[in-house]
Image (cartoon, rainbow, N blue to C red; front, side, top):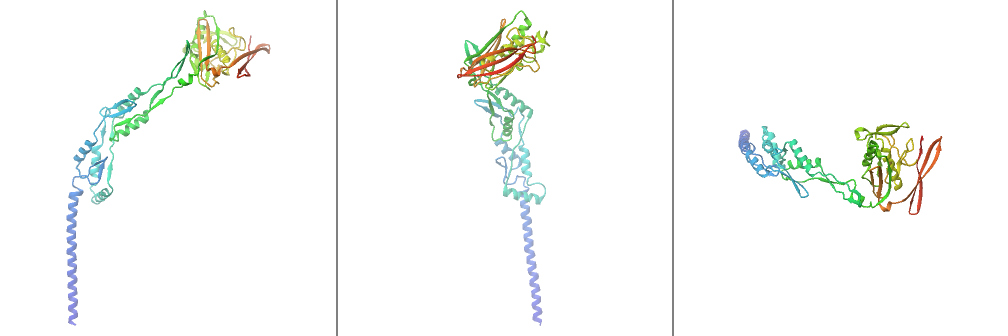
Amino acid sequence: MSGEVKNDSENTKDKKKLYRNIGIVIGIIIVIGCIGSSIFVKNILYNGKIANNIFIEDVDVSNMNKKEAVKAIDKKYKLQDLSLNHNNDKYNISFQDIKLKYNIEELVNQAYNSTKTGSYFKDIASYIDIKSNGKSYKIKASYDENELDKLINDIAKKINKDSVSAKVRIGNGINIIPSSIGLRFETEENKKLIVNALNNPKSNIIDLKVTDVKPRVSTEDVQSINTNLASFSTTFNSALVERSYNIGLAAQRCNDVILLPGETFSYNEHTGMRILSNGFKNAPVIVGGDYSDAPGGGVCQTSTTLFNAALLSGLQIDKVRNHSKTSHYVPRGRDAMVNDGDSDLVFTNNFDHAVYVECYRSGSSVEASIYGASQDKVGVSVKVDNFTYNGLPAAKTYRTITKDGKSNTSHIYTSVYRE
């Protein structure tokens, strides 16, 4: 019985000894952990350096202090001018002119503080995450945007070039002045390219976006103009100075016009409003069936002359209207009255090639000619049937066009005159 008691006592002692040893081991582990933690905090986490596996652009700033990191990045990414290229021309944007700066110090501070927020456990978590996955920062630029816009606009002015349409000159034959391609500096797109380059210090060379601008009329468009399709002229009393002036001004504004296939000519659009501020002078016009002075008197003689040239050339007549009184310079059914309201002379180039409209005053006559391609030349005859309408003189105008042995007659317009 006493032996059993002894055994229990010995068991109790063994347990106490075991617990004491376990406690000692735990204590040692805690001490070692504290020492290790202290070493980690002092030498790795809060060591005055940037954590491992951190990059600013492609510069590895791991284990650098702030000054070392700034120096390393400054060495790799120096501020530099932008070089802009278009074909063989080069343009420059100075970093000093736009006050360019990189946010290097800001990024270094962010990198440094990524594991030094002041919250121990949060910093430990950040350290572990960065060591495993890495962390990178992109450099951003700051600059004077107004100055940048000014420099971009200066470059645009140097590059931009208007396109020039081909021209036709009638003199010793029919001469063609070639067209030229224009250039358009794409300001919005180029600014994006420049801003991207400023924020990407790896590249300072930019190929500018410049678009070719085609002229409205190319050399090829008018090369086919090689013959006179039709001409017409009328005469006037040049002693009527103001009226003569208006005839010449209207002719000048209708001269040197190229119509591509399908394009339409409006007399009113070319001459503009017949008002004093538009250059016209007071001269006799028909108002309410009677003559009175008004700006632009005489312009209907120019429109009539041009109408007859278009009529005889075979161009499509879209709009024409007669005067209220019979004109003295053309027969009934051959006049074209215009005003600033709804009366206009309109015709369309219905040919396969371009046509050239020539109109000018020469002394006491006004001349109009239509030039075009010989392939478009047609035979034209005009017939006017005079008749009486409600006791008033009237006329119906017809045109017959003959091409390739086939003829087609169409009604142009019906005219009714007061006298």
